[in-house]
Length: 530
Image 1 (cartoon, one colour):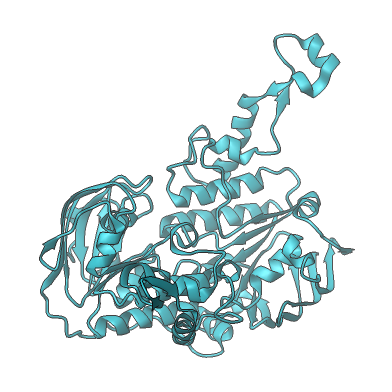
Image 2: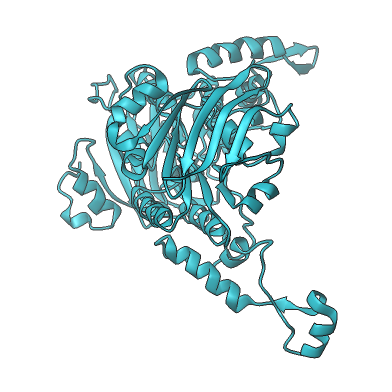
């Protein structure tokens, strides 16, 4: 099979070496997986391929890229797209106030002569042309249909489930007539298991049509199921490129982190009191795409309660409603006291912390350093990391730095120093900073939503082990996740949400079929409810 793209001895340095002498090929019409821990160099390599300005504004790179056997110097995303290279980034880049069609066809709109006066159109050209909305909708629906997902081309992006937004991003790239290489950076991170299976099937179809795909994912079972070959990076170096049929999930995990990794474990008995610490009654939350339609819930002190369900069914709305980020009504009682809804400070003051699924929009101050991000909420709520001078309080940078350095070590945050701006960290390390900020508040109850989204398997194990450790030390944790296997690996009970309501509660060792039935709303057939 002919090579479409070749990396030859690619080296990139910032303050330290990020990529070191990396060489491998992408064949025409193959699905080539690229895996590695956060900080392994995957994003940097793809930024080089796509000509991102941050590469060339920081001194460029060493080595050669060849496309169709010809050396290329890609200095902008526009040049990459002209060659036929498309990229779907990990962070969504859609215009929420526009329709699906408008997002898919942006900057590639189809025009037609004005029906009012065709002679005028011929004289003045595009200045009096109008959008051919019918043709644009037809193109959009064709691209979406090829992905096997049911999304209306006229629907507004705002308010869509995040999984559907991801499919719109991919549809935008495959609608381009010249696309020959498609980079998918963590495309399944925001998808449910069913949606991920749909995407994997669509990728296979695209590859058969001749499009090469670079598939970046931390879900190693998907890598093994979907890809033809896999390349493993570790600490900026190439570890191996091999046929996927010749490897396994455990081997890939070990190659990525340099040690054997497993997140499967038995649930250890915890010394929780069994007392009810949080009661939720008839909770309704107006969170777009994740509405909660009246749920009742009890959380026991010292347990890890899992909340699962399909995308858009309301599982994410629960924590966001209790913490006060979206309009909510109902009754929430925490430690025997009624908690007013709609006020995040009240919830934080009571001893509840929250790690949001939206780390960039809610969880982080991207232009501020790590140490300030970790300290910020504790400063606001508990007056920590402040020096008192007379009647005034000032930020105590030294104490914040000491604390941040301890968190960096404990959470294995890959960074240059505590003064590095959070916006420059990889997604997984940003998530660790969010967790560090929440733990700094010393909460009695921790809501954590999608804690391992877009995180490599090594960091995933660290975070799950940390949550187990916190629960064993007495902290109560409510973990919302699209990763059913992770919920089953550490939770004491798992609540399944369907259509904004509680479909049922299952033991983590209940049959997988019971979880599927509850997620689909067929609760009468599930036998493992607790």
